[in-house]
Length: 282
Image 1 (tube, rainbow, N blue to C red):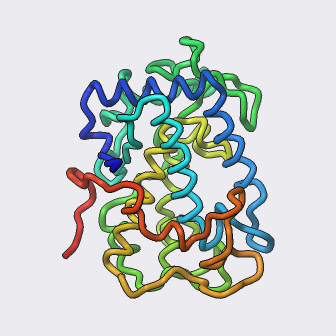
Image 2 (tube, one colour; image 1 turned 180 degrees about the vertical axis):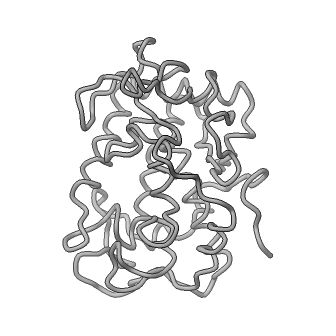
Image 3 (tube, rainbow, N blue to C red; image 1 turned 45 degrees about the vertical axis):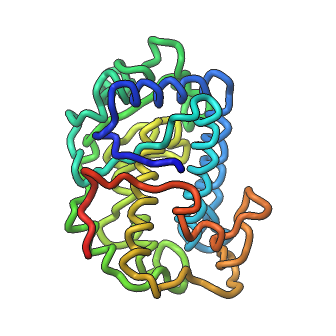
């Protein structure tokens, strides 16, 4: 059984194995296929049209499946690798170990168009060329904290985890409920605010160009699992067919046979090592 750990708890060998697997997927072209898929869905998901990966109830099960597929590719390279999660309620500054030269590398240099200059994904190493993007820059870009926002706090996370209803009509970015507040279109902006805080590629539809994307979404996925634990009688909604959104039993594109119902129990696929993560309530 795969165990996902906090990035802060990874050993030096685990960090090296994870980054090496990422670099290998980049070398073979597998990595960029995931970037392309995410970018395509974010650009076409719409409040007033079809929405699958974003702005609707299937945001969480869609990304759970997306991460599972990516983790499976990592494990083809190294069976011991699992996706770490980044608890941004704890590791909150540009000096956190996450951004060290032996792991993700640091923030970009402003005078160089926010180019990341250190770590295994720096362009100087010629192993992390950006080929799927929203601009012509061939290098990874970041601007940690430059947007003037702060990363979400534990109190903000707990307030969203206390919401008893998964989602609500009109099932888009104006909805009430847990999903939309976690996704960040309402309330304190949790998931969306982290993308803005990291900046650079993380602020675009091609956000998986930055490998921190996977750790960010692994933590969002963990928060969904914690919400499910706190609200065992609160179901995924909508349960019945609803225009433009993915109900409980409807397949989610791009998969032909994966529904939100298939993604409700993460324990079929992996568990979380919660040491050092946001506190759980009884």
